[in-house]
Image (cartoon, rainbow, N blue to C red; front, side):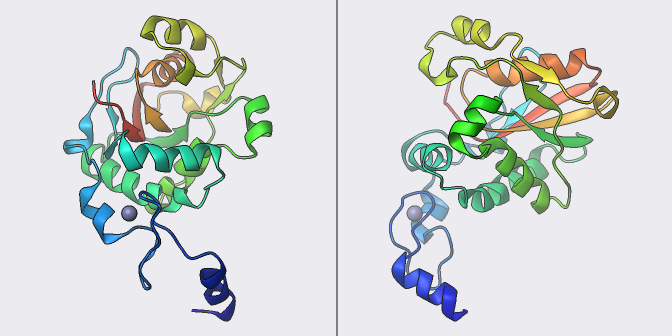
Length: 217
Ligand SMILES: [Zn+2]
């Protein structure tokens, strides 16, 4: 350990990405309790959507997983993407191996990106791709700044809110490809479905999805 990182550990003792408790020395990013006690899904917890074939997620969106993702999304805990990327890559290897041609993500609108300063799904896609010896490429942009999906309760209203909000950025890149779309959370699946619909309309042959966490139906 270098002097600088040693000093940082004293000033800001590392905490577990999930339960946020201080880590015992020698542990990196997650505590031994969370490693086994997190709400892991079985076989990727596959979810189906109107326009995507399958969405896999290693974790359920509840308890410490939810708190962790909220810090990642809203409290600038961007370093979490490394741990998330490892988990997501493992889930993709186990459940979607050889089923996609390129990795992409669900983008933020430019206004939301300016507010937050980072695109959490892009960070997640990049760290996941890195784990898979691949790269993540941009295939979509969000052209309408919609109301936050998390503030809309009904599935029907979520679908209406997000309809037409995305546009494909590179038809040539997408054409005939099986695209693996990455996002942080899947709830009703309406955002992923709208992104998948946009990609299929732009010539993609299939869309699969992977998120860190999913809600229980
Ligand atoms: Zn923990």
